Amino acid sequence: MRTQVIDIFFPEVTFLLSVDTPEQLPPDHGAEVAFAGRSNAGKSSALNAIAGRRTLARTSKTPGRTRLINFFAVNPSCRLVDLPGYGYAKVPASVRERWQESMAVFLNQRRCLRGAIMVVDIRQLLTPLDSQMLTWCQNARLPVHLLLSKSDKLSRGAAARALAAVRKTLDETGMAVSVQLFSANNREGVSEARTLVLDWLGAAGNQDKKSPGNKGRESGAYKQSRKNLRDFPRSGRRSG
Ligand SMILES: Nc1nc2c(ncn2[C@@H]2O[C@H](COP(=O)(O)OP(=O)(O)OP(=O)(O)O)[C@@H](O)[C@H]2O)c(=O)[nH]1
Ligand SMILES: [Mg+2]
Image 1 (tube, rainbow, N blue to C red):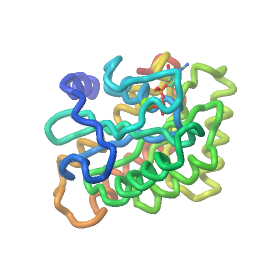
Image 2: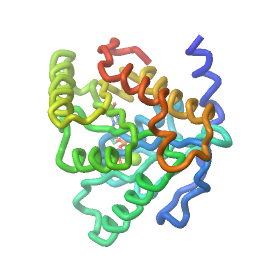
Image 3: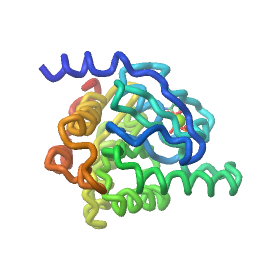
Image 4: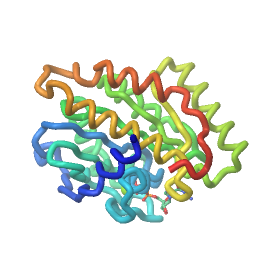
């Protein structure tokens, strides 16, 4: 059963390392899934919920908490990556520029990167910076799955309307991005997101990781998972 696979998949997850510059990145092999999004959107909380661990990645009420790229080892060849949040006004320009450079290198050149989980606060929807990040990912031919986070902050009706609005925006831009409601607090959508992360990481283990360029990102498995997730049904507030 799928849940049994999930239960035995993440217990070994541990903090691996934090990096500040592209030169410090760990070896580019195996498979990685990155968590990206605005500062304070709930990236670290989402990573923890999906990994099934409360305190793996540090979370905070204060925006800008995650300033380095943090790697968590799921097993010797698979990693979850907590990226620094963008859009936090108090970050000095020099830090922001360094972050942008690291991000560009990471998204464009990291061959083991299988997909990005983009976390967007459901109360803010897609901001210009989120759209920019989506464009970066599309240009890097990186599959993106969008979590509309903190869905517990809205009523069911309002959350459904927000989901429909984001789908419409994505359809209008023509971006092939899957999207779902998500709450680290009441666990809405956690199991669906976890299934996708496992698919991305697992599919990588079944193919030639030395294939050139970004071919691995466009494998049938990823296309299928994107297709399946394009229209996630609202699955109940305690689905995880
Ligand atoms: N109500 C609610 N609050 C959440 C949820 N997820 C995260 N939060 C809160 O939002 C705040 C930010 O969460 P983080 O997970 O630290 O956000 P982040 O995107 O990692 O933030 P930075 O690392 O600073 O960019 C914290 O106070 C969390 O408790 C959620 O699903 N529901
Ligand atoms: Mg964080």
